[in-house]
Length: 270
Image (cartoon, rainbow, N blue to C red; front, side, top):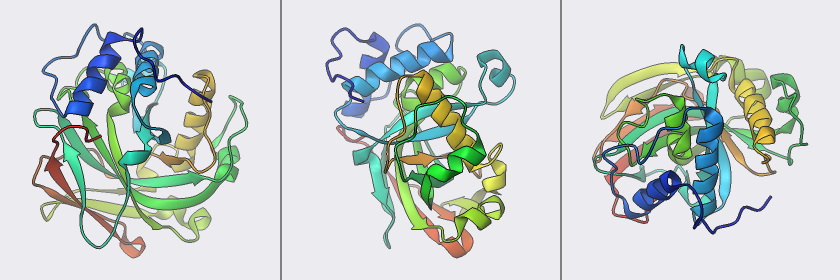
């Protein structure tokens, strides 16, 4: 499904976020009237996707906590992950950019790779969605926004700026995931101190429920999940703020560790 790259008539909010991300500059306030619904937020997100010079490689999911879940009619929100912001973890820490004065966090996640383009329907369940999954990986979502208050004004504001995503670090493939997934655990450390523990069971309904939610949401947005795309299913240990110079390690036990290092953004970074 193609989306035009001309954003001349798009949302001024989307344009402000895109410009700030491309130049590595913080926004001191939300750049306009905050969207009052997730539908309005995703319209802004779609305008920003159209203006962003990269293709979507996958999607991130984030939890919407009470009481916002009732008010906004959803327990999750989604945002795009772009191809140039997907990195493969190696033996040296993966460097990622943070905007000085903006928001940045690391999240240990379980990442699903879709093996086939999803049929276009809106009645997906976790059981049905599982058949689309080809592989599962460990991962670290880099949450990030030029606006430091991205998470402080409700889920519609969060969703409007790419769902507060700034990248994805892919770790090891998880062998035997169909049997093991519900029991998988992990921990996150920053500068050597453990800041969170959890696992697949920390994600409401589990990672496959996140996938089903995304499939139904994309159907409503006129989009689809395509073969080879990645789905980062939600924070398994929490959302852990990080600043330039700090090092994080996501420990997935027998499935290995992902090490990463926050560095200051210099523009054209995300």
